[in-house]
Structures are given as C-alpha cells and as structure tokens.
Length: 147
Ligand code: THU
Image 1 (tube, rainbow, N blue to C red):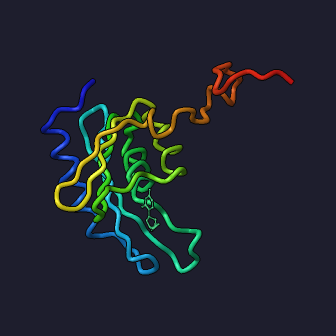
Image 2 (cartoon, rainbow, N blue to C red; image 1 turned 120 degrees about the vertical axis):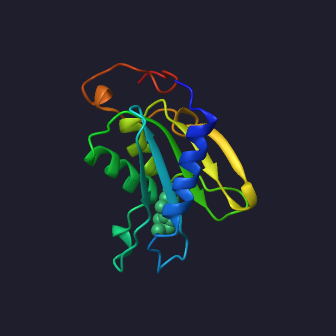
C-alpha cells in the first residue's frame, strides 16, 4: 500500500520532533526516526548514546522497539531525520532490524534545508537474513559458482 503524502508529512514531522530528544553526548549527531505501522499508528525513536560507546541505540531501532512494544509488527514506512545536507542512510544493523518487521518498507531520508530522498529497504538491504532463511528457505542471494 502506497504511503500517502499526508502520511509522509506526519512521519517527517514526528521524526524531526523526536530528533530533538536525541541523547548524543559522544557524537553530537542527533537522529530522529518515525515508523508507520499498517494499522496507521506511528512510533518514534531517537538515538541514545552511552559512556560505554558500543551500547548506543540508534533512532531507527528505538522506533521499531516502540512499535513492537505497542503491538505493531507490520511496518510500512520509516522517516529518518538528520541535520545533514545529504540525509544519512540507516546503518547496517538498523536495516537488518527494520527488515524483520517491514521487508517492503518505504524509506524517506530527511536532511537540512528540506533535503529529502525517497528509497526502499529493498534497495538499502537487498538480501537480508530472515527467519525464513534460518529455517532453510532456498532464496539465492548470489551467483552459484559451485564448490
Ligand atoms: N545513528 C542512528 O541513530 N542511526 C543510524 O542509522 C546511524 C547512526 C546514531 C548512532 C550514534 O548515536 C550517532 O548516530 C553517530 O553514529
């Protein structure tokens, strides 16, 4: 189902708003994310850094966790806000976590001065690891070159 202009604007506003709550004393790089669930609800997350750097939680994963905690497991879209001239793409870990609940996710990247890029998770993460594969699904992710 295509995301409407009104839904994108709602997600974009939510991503920018939550970005202001980002806790980023280490990097100073604030990120806001808003996911749209199939039932129409939106959930937000911001990055939360830690003095033990590796424990940092990215905005996208925080938003996914908020959605799942509220019972929303079918995600349609995500908007990600960063104050960059060319908007940031989600990190690899976030792409994998987004794929768990939104394999067909549409992605809107938001940056400074109204910069916007529209893409999909399928473009950003073409061959995610999935529970289906874990259970033995035979989807090829590369060219068979034998043994
Ligand atoms: N960050 C996110 O929140 N999402 C991403 O997809 C990339 C990185 C955060 C983590 C850290 O707090 C800061 O951005 C710099 O890497």
